Length: 193
Image 1: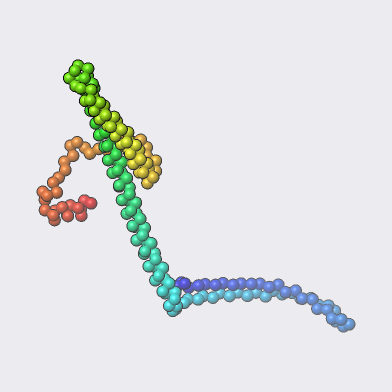
Image 2 (image 1 turned 30 degrees about the vertical axis):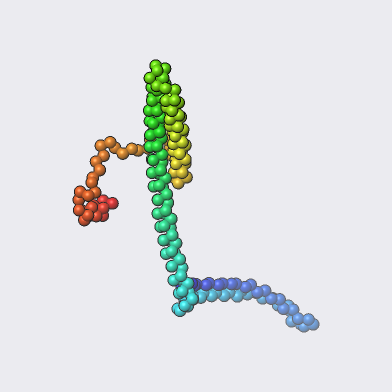
């Protein structure tokens, strides 16, 4: 509504006429001609307050949409990071419960063998077996949780190919945040972020 409007029109008309008079010695006549017309008009609104207000409102709506898009992107990033770290935590839980189940399996075997030799009682064997069963149940739960976390991440990024999830390097040196001055840390963040 703020830009100029250009309109162009054109037409052509073909005219054929025949003249014939009754009871007249004048012979019939015939003629034909074309009439053409063309029109171009340019309209530029100089002051239409409603259009100006509409334009300003449209700019405000566009700015609001950009902010909403940025907010949705940030929310997506947060969901992605949360899903990734949940998957890493579930992976660690699977490893922990597997190690715990293996340790309790060995303990149960020791207690069972000790009962055969008379060093342990039957209730100790039952207790060790119950702990082993609980650890095996925890391992299955952790594996299921890991698969659910993987599915949650796949909803955000699509199918994941089979890959080994990364671990922190064993020789990683973490610096003490209290070792330097705050200004030095802020300068490092601004330069290396």
